[in-house]
Image (cartoon, rainbow, N blue to C red):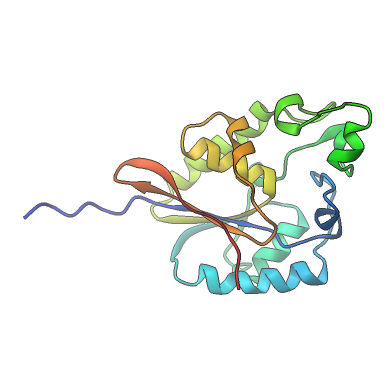
Length: 196
């Protein structure tokens, strides 16, 4: 009979709940915009999606929309703040919608064109790589409360894509993603799952 293999650790991503800015499509990087009432309700519903997991490590972005989501989902007492989970620094794009940015830069996309005065995709990718290394060394599953673009980069880096590969992975406010393994190969097991 073949030996059973130990389970490889998973990285579970929980995006913070809705904010007034996320509802309007405003780039919300380092601005500390709080959860809306809808966002708080969505954060509470995350508890049911996360309940089947046992986490060795729980991490949260330092921004209040993520830390409040963490608390409302039931993990506030266990969570450690990790500055690498902060959202992409959008520089001059902060608080602006894609449509507003395209008024002066037709066809602009964050992934292709980047931002002035903020982080590059490669900068965000380096932060994501540090989070992944920490999760893989945690001795079990890790839960991260974070943000949309940062989580998309995390997923891309988990499966070996460059940071801009995150452009292919829409991730809604209040959604969950599970990064796991198929045998020894890193895979995206579940993505953009919303609590009911």
